Length: 459
Image 1 (cartoon, rainbow, N blue to C red):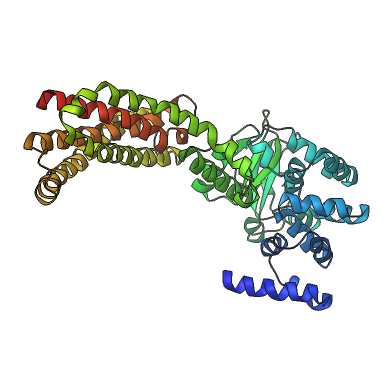
Image 2: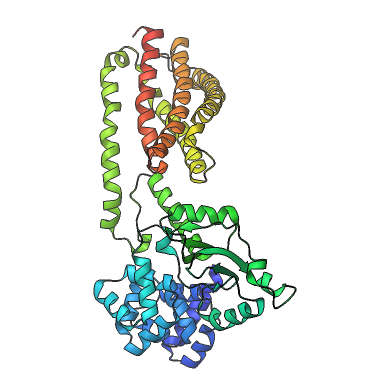
């Protein structure tokens, strides 16, 4: 698919450079808006307005929504007042609000100036809600019906109003004071026994909905759980104010997953795609975490310094420090990633911490026991027999393997507990991820190692 798109892209570029505009337009109208937006991102700035003006009005608006903010701003600045109004007239309110959020103030002023009063009101309403809330991602364009309507009247209303709505497959039944009381699907209307059947007789009244203040991540989870096409949004007085559609929910899922991945790898989440981020942007996102981890790793150095005499007395112990720290870090990361993912999917609650800890401890005993046995054989056969390291004795081998077993147990415990504690404290569990777990486990593994050495070897 990617190779085919590259071939098409090259052909379109040649048509544009050869000024074969009629042929180019015939090809562009067959393409998906998302693919067109990807094509625009590869064009030179002077080529973008030229190709955009070849698109039919409706396709142009759909493509505009999918484009990167920089390309959108470039086009808006180059649009005539009439062109800007044509694009705005084709946009849904939530898409227009998303665009306004990304634009500088002078561009926003021009957009609002040329938007019709109804769209301007909808944009202002959406922008009023907290960032990352259901209200901020909803659209105010939905089909509403009255309970006293007949099926025939409802279908006629959908025909008249549906062209401007983001979805017509689900229609919401509201009372005269705009309170949500039910819903019907187009399937319900088409399969009704009688055209004179009233909506209140066929509507579904057991509704699942969210409020304008509901977190967008919770909204996305509800779409995943219930397989909705759209989810109604109500205000504090249960009045219908909008809907969230599945395409917006998918955007939220991608955004939240990206944020979790970046946090789990000790980076501040970026709002820009990688190729649009400058080295300074990446520096700002990464350096605070690197500094914090560097400072926290100081404890590891202090522990090694405190046990310098033990290392001097038994030099062979030094060779196994990286293995212990690496194995401990990896073991803790496995547990933390598993728990973080389960928390994000709401498979776990803080009340499950005892069950999680018990499960991870049993897993750690199995993993740690197997690793310790394998390590014992490896040290004796490879390090001592094959490589001829005569400083390694049976007791040294025992110290390393016991420390390894206990380190794995501690690492699994730390890895599962920290994310759950973070969740209980209303923090993002992804913050307590691999880098933090590894730093903590590194220090603890060294303590365990040297304590075993002191106890068994007497160093």
